Structures are given as structure tokens and as C-alpha cells.
Image (cartoon, rainbow, N blue to C red; front, top):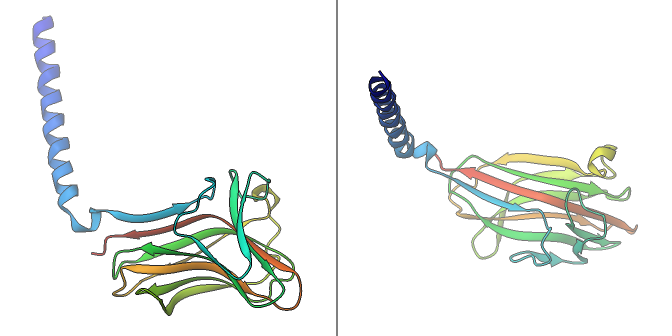
Length: 187
């Protein structure tokens, strides 16, 4: 009696294994399921490879100014263009999403979260959001708010992502955390 139950169990296990293997082959062979290019930075490390600052800004670590974790990026100034910048690889012609948690001071009147085409230099704006401070009150997230938009990079395989602001003569700042850019393979 035990032997037949054991055989039946192994028989069903074999059937389930074969079905799972067949599904894995079908799913893996589907181009739309082949992969996702994802960039993610929570600024919790003390190094920030690939990022650079335009104007006045930097990276905080361990001072309690982040959305989550230990770090964040920031810009602050009264004049000029100030931005945290990074170039990210994407799939050409993919439907992508850019997301970041951002905290704005009261005096930000011309801030932007932007994706631009990149071919060794900034190209045209692909999509952007205009940022004006201070943003919605959100104490459960340290007054950071999530901003996101969809974009298609066209033929570009790399894009420039930045969060920045124009100084307007008043002390203004923008803090950025938990940046995510996702691009599934195009169909």
C-alpha cells in the first residue's frame, strides 16, 4: 500500500515538474517577458558612482534628512541651475517609468524632475514634472512625496535623469531619495 502511494506521489510530482518546466520555457521565450532594465538608488551608501552635481548640492548620510534609510541627494542655492544628475541605461523604444521621492522647500518655484535623451551629452527633454515647493504635507514620509511619470526614450539606449531647480533669489532646496527607473523590454 505504501509503495503505490509513493509511486503516485512521484508520478504527480513528475507531471507537475514537466508542466512547470514547459511554462518556464514558454515564459522565458516570450520577448515581452525577457527582462527589465532597472536603476535604483536609495543613497544609503556613502559612495554615489555615476552621479554628479550641477551648481550647489551633494549627498547627506546619517543626518536624518532622508525619506527612508541613511542618505539622500540634495541641491540648495539662491541663484543659477542646481541639479543631481545621473545617466541610466534603458531599452530603446520601451515604455519606462521614472520615480523619485522628493522634498521641497517653500521657496522652490522652478524645480524639475526630468528625463532627457543622452548620447554623450544632454539631448531633448523626453518627459518632466515641474516642482513647486513645499509640496503636500506628508509627515509619515518625512514630508517627501513620490513623483513619477512614464516615458519612452525613442531610439536612445541611455537617458539623463535629474532633479534640480533654478535659484530665484531666495534660499531654496530640493532633497531627493529612492530613485527608480524601470524599462521592460519592448514588445
